[in-house]
Length: 221
Image (cartoon, rainbow, N blue to C red; front, side, top):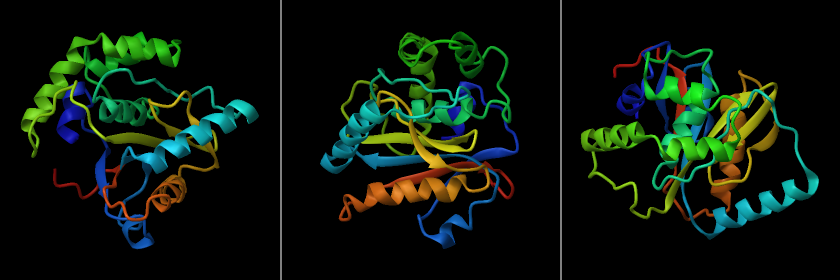
């Protein structure tokens, strides 16, 4: 993940991506603050899909408050949910991060300003540099390379805090999900409360992964 975001143009800063070993307090205490975003990888199964439909119906009926500062894009590119998750983590914290001149991240941020989530998805789909970066990162990874067209059953989503609220950003959903009050100091634990609810819907499932965009202090990579 670290190599991939560097290939997209994220320059080394005070922040990096760190594993979250568990949703329990002892593991959360190991994540050095500040935490800018939390990325959650989970299997696409019936319980998660039921939750997605329930949330969609509830928000369409009741509405929700969304921060004007929030960056959100839909996902239409096959097997790009990890990239979309990273984009959501990074571009919602662009004031704290640095992009290389002429890089994918710099260009995508500029080209999508003022665009709708659907328009951003089209721009992302048409960017040939994304395919090259994905293939390069996959080739250097610990597992075999996965085609952008291959069907997978896992999915990445991102949690960020904006203007006092916790937001879930999922390119497969029609809109961001406002999960209520949060703050920069409580983002990690607030996100874990939502993650625990997702896991509780499928208690026999163990294929969950969590990563924080957080302090690089003590990072050896």
